[in-house]
Length: 338
Ligand SMILES: *Cc1c(COP(=O)(O)O)cnc(C)c1O
Image (cartoon, rainbow, N blue to C red):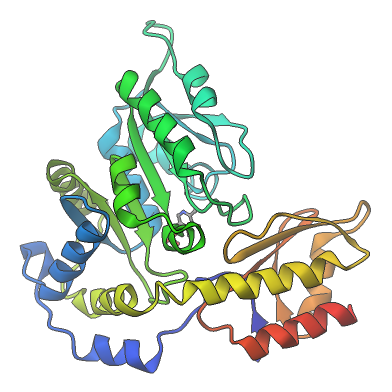
């Protein structure tokens, strides 16, 4: 079995998670009758100190529903240029919401209040109406970088001053919470809406949750149905989510320690030009000039280590629940041999 560091989405449910799924109480969630989904939504809302939550099949759907609810066709959404909502959701902002993107050049995926302030369009018939700012935490393409909550507070103020909504793509927000010690309640106060993924570091087979005010979630529930995401006895899946919220948050610190080990090992290699600071469970490194990321990923694969070449000269490792300390030692040995 190769050591799979391609993504934290490759995890398989543990026996304990499967047990929780097998014994779940379920009902028809479109009728609002699935007790497991209702419990999961209540737990998530409480975790972030928000009023309500909506269980969705994927993080992409949660984000797209949020953007749909926060915008009108012809609006403009401000986000960082490497944001998942912009580059990895199939053009969904245009497709689903008829809105366009103002993509800002951030620092490892993170933008500042000053940048946001300058990117807001004036109230002028020539210009798209700026209505939403979407942040990502941790930033996937930023090598798992974490936002400073102080900066988010400043962005929040800019949004409030300009009647903009603020959404968080928190696919890896639990990683950010564990890495920085910032609580869910603190994030809940900073954003209008938050999406989190259960299908990544949390180890669930599927699932995401969109969290926000009750009136917003009511509208989001309608949009989820329109997008084809109204599921029936999905409580079997939500039970995995409940299990994950109860058991898999704290252990993310282990994944972060593993990522640091891998980051240190890769930084010693001659062919590596730079490694992004390792702040959570992602390691992104740049290969030297003339080097080809695809070739190096192929060499790693032949030695039993799977990674993704995310650009012509960058490779990404992601640690997760299915990576043991022994596998990290093995991975370090493979890297040393390369
Ligand atoms: C994975 C991811 C998502 C959502 O992914 P799904 O596969 O649709 O659940 C959203 N944002 C970021 C930053 C991600 O890494």
